[in-house]
Image 1: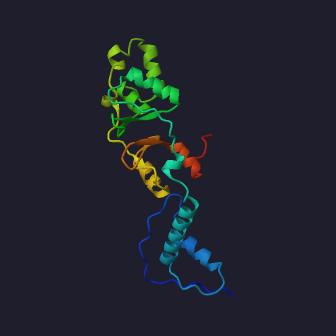
Image 2: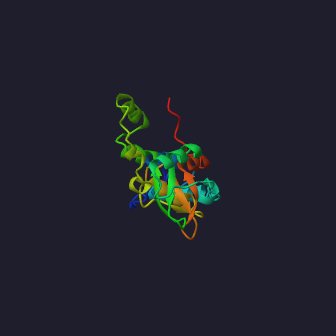
Image 3: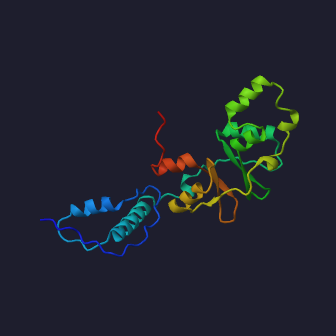
Length: 212
């Protein structure tokens, strides 16, 4: 006969959920404990803490090999702050990227320029919105627009991560901003490569489900 699990009266605050964890209710925990034969002297708060710690340790074991340096794309041709927009756009196209780091003469990352930054500077939220405006107003883009320097359009400072950054560091960094990519830097702060959000999610098997 299975005994009703003993539940301690003192309850601790639930630990914050890690990415990927599900929130366990007291009912979930009590039902699970009721399926284990014998007497369990553990509170729902302690059970929840144990689950939280076991999940974190298991995840770190599984993702131990994930670092920014291993996942980054290293063959990146960055932008320079004095580059004109008409010079920067072809670099996006040739490299198949929607964001590029901006570096100074010493190779230090000083910002990042994204497709969103460019569209915003041109008064549009999406590429299709810009295309619609260009079709309605063929002369919308002036020569002055094409001559705008990267330094005036980029986001600065950029969120960067070191080559040795692991899973938890990368999760926190990507959670801090909505961008598609982050520059990866050496210990000296120089550009080492670019880590794409989609590449990171793919490596961690965390891709969002495909839209129907």
